[in-house]
Length: 567
Image (cartoon, rainbow, N blue to C red):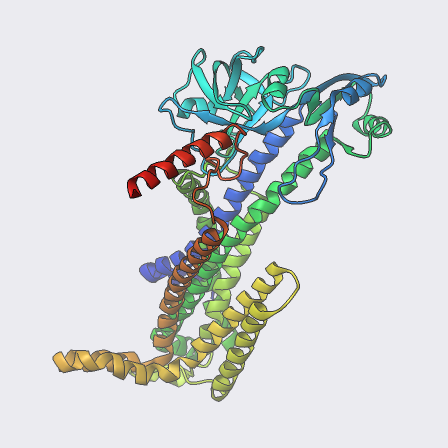
């Protein structure tokens, strides 16, 4: 039976290839999603690990109020001097971490696609948070270093003058070096400006204070032991972590941010898998119907129902495995394509070489294979009902199952359950939002399955309505089309279901996007009640205080000019 199944697939190359593609598309999106997010996460992990490289522990201030955008309190340099006196401490370095704006050669602020422009300070060895790849580190009030990605994008070279705006009015600095961090090809779209510590303290109005303290211990001292010693002298407003703990914390924050991207891409992948399941079911249904005489002949020659079932399921297993393997390979290309799309939209996420985790391979193989087997199960069971006598008939079709009369009742139950889950998920109060959305999504799947099972009963009336205008102009062609559509209503319904899901997705995305755009527009209209609004180019970074008087003066002149025109 195994050889028979493989020969059957080889004999129907086109149909086998198209069925493999139905499996491949969904698996490709799943594999691409995991590969892309794992690659981005590894890049961020590499950046955060590099950021703490050379340090054993990191000291930071505690936030006054715990919010998503709360910044820790600055640390007094006196505390760094106190830490330096601990016998097991080899070196201590403070770092300023703030925001700035870089002006390109065209006189406009460098676009970052929503990512911040980070202002940081250079720390000498043994600390390796920032590595100067070209030139040297800044060492004066008029010198800076830029990340290599921004310098390349804006055509800056070492020795150029670069205009930077900080908490002080914008001014020109000499570019003396290009910086890199880890092995990532970018900083996630962010621009990084490097100053020396004294210059940063003056520019960001933090005299005698730092945002972070990086501590390196002496040889033989464990990070945990050093952490305990430092914790014993810290004030209540400060905290200490080992370098690995600090990198893990920063990585966890990124993982939470990436969960939204992963969920969104996997949702589309799941829809592709669902559509593929319908196509697989339809393909195997057609195959079983066309092979009725062949299957009956096998039964006549002594094949049991179990052997017939095994033969069809082996075909499905082969298609599922091939589609899954090819889908995993195609997922690598899909990940690169999605990343290229993000870059085209101005969202330059950091990446390294593509990461293919074992989890990705296992999940893709299981999803692709199990969905294919599930889609082929009903047609395979139907194949076992082909009686040996069917081999003597010119035209035959598999007989209806004994439980076929229960199908409408089961479909109605699925519709009710699915609708209930959708309503409960959307209207439920309290609880986790992700759980409610997951429940609503599960209900939508159950609802679609129920509608698909009921749809054969409406194929006849729907076909008459759809074919009516065609029959008026082409009587014979329209009639043949209608009769062909209603000859196998189940097959027609399953084919239409795949199209229905695709159209439903397009309509949902369109309505959701328009609703979201309208809600945001209304919120902005209610929030911005003044005459003008001044925002940073990235939408959230602070604006220099000197901007206020300038804007007020310009607004007063504009009002005076407008009043003179009216007079």
